[in-house]
Length: 441
Image (cartoon, rainbow, N blue to C red; front, top):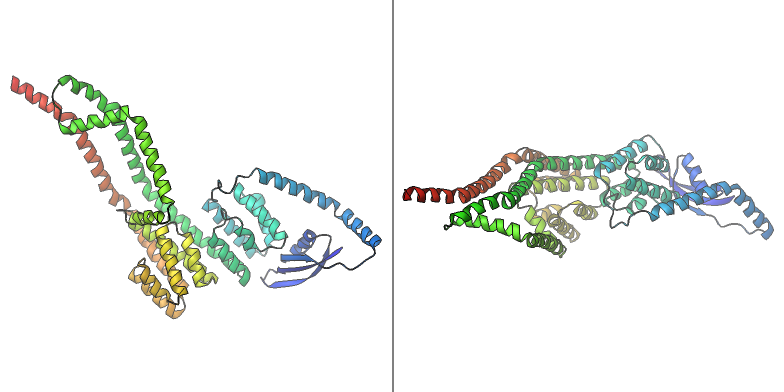
């Protein structure tokens, strides 16, 4: 058997190292796992000089002992390659749904808390994963752990599955021996994030449905309803009111220039997409979204709540302040706010205080700025950031409960204008004809 030098972590999270004999690196890894040690690095020791004949015999014996395992590993490797060949390129892959990621992190927390070795825990989760993309990523992570790589390093190679914030917190947990607490913090953070998304979707479902209904109503009126009246108005042989002529012109455009209308819509969509790829276009667009009536304030406060919550998780995990700000800026789905958080990081790198750069960003309310000031002075910034996140989340909850009452008057006004325009356009010619007919009598 060959001699291997290994480095790993025991169940308490402490670094251990030593030498172990085994047929291969995989065999040594399995032995270490059975002993409750998670292998991080396994390297073969320099072999002693032997006579060629004995070396050849030892090689033959080793090959005979590892024959079955080698065949199995070879078939497993070939199967993995065949499966990888069927995998879509990363460009076409979507991110793993947040509920699946939360379930994985919750399970990892429970397994690490129970003292199950890292490799065995991930192997079990890979076999039982309901999401294929997550399962494939976990199988690859198992292979990398067997080769001696760290968990966070292996997770970082799957950015579509594990966000950078998750990788950073796991990395800190590995290095500090607090991996169990890191998984617990990530689970709480991601569950709060999922709950906020669900509430926003639920609150905006009604206005989106009404908007789609209005668009469909305009299309149906112009294609099916107004043309019926246009034939009747043509038989009057009189000058029609301006509103009626506008209705007839829009209907004629819908009927005769449908292809042009489709081209205009496609051109606007493609042009907008290409414009958003410009360096500062996305920042402008995201800034406009935060100034939208009725919903802009809700979006801004929900993003600030996410910032405070994720920033607190990073600081509590031991991530350095500047690195935490850089990672948090990437978790925000708004380029306008991401740029300002990046400017906060640059200010701190120049030696400015967090309170000063927060005030210069113009993102936070005076109450949150006071919390940041107290947190810097007392050294409890992560706890006060949680308080700030809860403050923003309470405001978002209140606004989401009242969003229907805020949007409903706007929707009713739009519908009323449409109905009034349609009614005047149709009935004004009839009233004028009746008036002329009555005057002629």
